[in-house]
Length: 430
Image (spheres, helix red, strand yellow):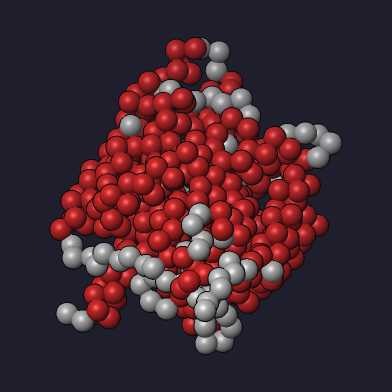
């Protein structure tokens, strides 16, 4: 088997993993309103602890994941990530039985830990399976797999968890019988047990299968773009790569607005006066818009425009649709929030190859730092939840405050920030 064939087969396999990432990650959009009712949370700030617990684990565990990968390599590291993800899924069973919100949050944290290991391995793996200038194209393919899983997950889980929840909420809020209220909430909480048991067992099976597959193990010791080997060798620390650190900030802000567009769109709709039943599939609209953006990336990068230009266009579109969402209402505003998915589609695929370009032996650490940036989703959505609860600010202005500055920074990175890698360490050559 040739190296090209091995790489193509590896891309297909990693595409399957990205489908799993998307399916698990975008379950949160359903869990937020579900757990708010089942665990009788007081407000949206508490509900967004779902995203905080899930994504904060990326910040806490990404660097340990890079050390694990240095020992295990990419392939075994991804298998271990699937196993940890499976453990997190099975923890939903005791959480549901006790209707314990802290235990749900712990289960989500464990799931995020498994994904941090998987993401730390898989994103640089895909980026360096071919030429770096087409890395955004390959990650766009992964994005289609990811968001394909993301579109399915709320459709499937919402039909299982949120069926009849408006009636349950009304009954819980109006009944004076504490025993009846507890019975209704316990029955609602138990809905999560079977789907998450199936998910957990499936993840363990996938981990076993991945260990048996012949994925190529890849190492990279390349010079930075436009630099010499001597110059790169003088870069002894990960702190010698300013384009990476600026990319970490960019990813932090990007993931925050991506999650707002996907996980928070239902909360946004409810703030516009819509019911849970009307908003339960809204996240699928955002993800569908992202799929369109990924298709554009696959066909256009690098033939029509570069990944840098794709990032610029994405940031500018994000600025436009967030302003339009602010100045419109109802389903029109929801449509513009969903179109943030189109604006977001090429951001992740473009940031990765730009940020890890030229890291050489530091690539696993650099990947871990970028994965830590996913913690933006643990910060920005709760900030939105807190701001929207302030009567002086409200839903629309809170959303604008949490999105517009993020897209401005993404535009900065697309135009200037990623070029900071060209600052080389001077080396005298006799």
